[in-house]
Length: 141
Image 1: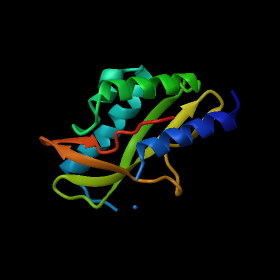
Image 2: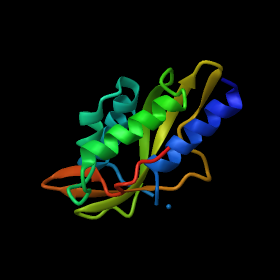
Image 3: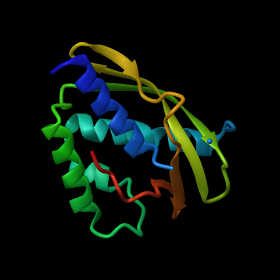
Image 4: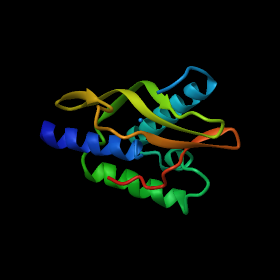
């Protein structure tokens, strides 16, 4: 698979993670960073349950959403990728919502690339029962 195809797949993954412009430091920032770490780890591991657990309670059939997302990820040949999430830029943080974008590197067979760039959109997150979740139920590739 060419670098261009892998990079396009990674960029698409980044857009799905960050589907919707920053930040402070604190417990919420650390918890939001953990959402991104778990998100990418779920794809690396093919762990549908872990991915489904990141979706907010308003999502209909989170298990099926996660299964479809991981299946699409594998069909695109991205299963050899590894992710090093080193940070997150958080903006518009309130008690129960935020927007954030992951920072770090994705490594693939032919090289590496940043997880996000200046064209990436911020992910919307909501806090449900004290736990940060992805607000967008659409995780497509």
